[in-house]
Image 1 (cartoon, one colour):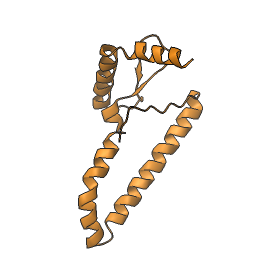
Image 2 (cartoon, rainbow, N blue to C red; image 1 turned 135 degrees about the vertical axis):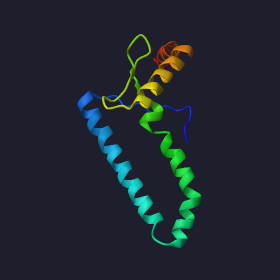
Image 3 (tube, rainbow, N blue to C red; image 1 turned 120 degrees about the horizontal axis):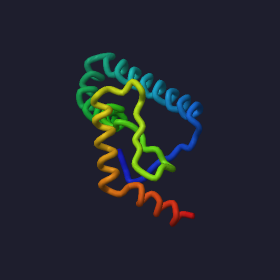
Image 4 (cartoon, one colour; image 1 turned 90 degrees about the vertical axis):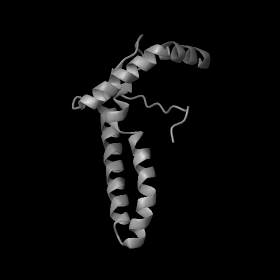
Amino acid sequence: MKSDRVDVIITDGFTGNIALKSLEGALRSLAKMVFSVIDINEETRAAGEVLLPHFLQAASLYDPDVTGGALLLGIKGVTVISHGSSSARAIVSSIAVAAECAQRNVVDHMQEAVTDAS
C-alpha cells in the first residue's frame, strides 16, 4: 500500500487537527462496520478469516505506535512530532524515524526536491 508518492496537507494546527480527528473517527467507524459485517454468519466469518490478516497489515501502516509521529517541514533539521498521549512504543518509533531520516539526509533531499520543483 505504501508507495514513493507523498501526500502533503498544509494547514494551521487547529484546522489540521480537526481534519485529522475527523479522518481518524471515520476510519474507526469503517473498521467497526467491517468487523460487524464479518460477524454476520459462518460464510462472512470464513471470508473474514481470509481477509483479516490483510486488513490488519494495512491498518498497521497507519498505527501511531508504529509510525511514531510526523515530520515537520520548514525546519533545518529532522523534527518528528508525536501526540501528547503517545505510548512509549510510539516515542521509540519516533526516535527511530528521526534517526533514519538523519542517516538518509532526508532534509537535504527535500530541500533539493523543492528547489528543483521551483
